[in-house]
Length: 84
Image (cartoon, rainbow, N blue to C red; front, side, top):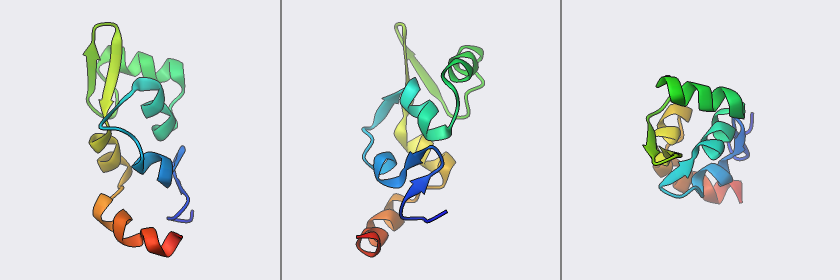
């Protein structure tokens, strides 16, 4: 897999452009987890990263997704010129 294009279920550029926290559907896409499976894991407290439940909504901290997927933001900034 080319490091400049895709990181699992989401392009590297998409992953790096995410806000500080994302909804569970976005996190599922990044982790290539199906919607039903992702919500079931979150309800059981078994999601691969910490899930915040805010009312009826689930949120995932993007920095945790980056760590799990091995995305080094400092390295991504350095490599940005190489991928252009």
